[in-house]
Amino acid sequence: MKHSKLTMAAVALLLTNAMVVPLGYAADEEVVYNNGSVKYVSGGVGSASTDRLSSLAKDFNLKLVFALKSGNYVSGVDVKIADAAGNTLVSTKSEGPWFLVRLPAGTFKIGATYEGKTEIRTIAVGAEKLKTVDFRWSGE
Image (cartoon, rainbow, N blue to C red; front, side, top):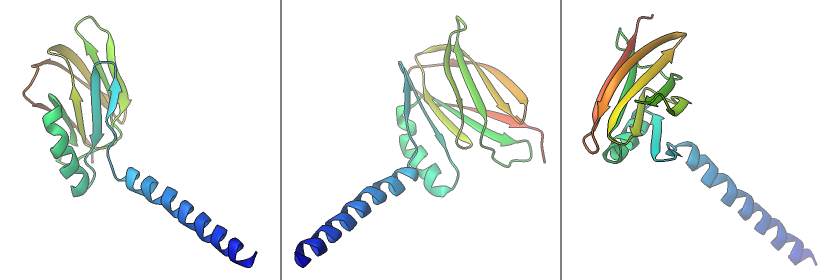
């Protein structure tokens, strides 16, 4: 009886640790979201994150970079992407200064809002080559 309680406690401890480790690991990974035919991922806070996003870049055709005019990167940017017909394809908040998105070839209106200030760009995107667009705001 004593042996089985000890075994059960050890099994419970192992299962608890097995569940905690993957969750901690998952927090270090950028999540790729799918919204119909559009997929996107954001991040870029720290060198490990920028390295992971750089390795994912081949799967995307548009990279948005968010920074102050002084050069400091910013995160928490509200991103809205609409197609030529005005249909919203993406509406989310960036988790870092880099935002990678895979769009069908075409022309899109991109709005990026940081601290209440919105910058808007109309961008033509091709099917394959990664295009980079910078958004810069005045700030401290």
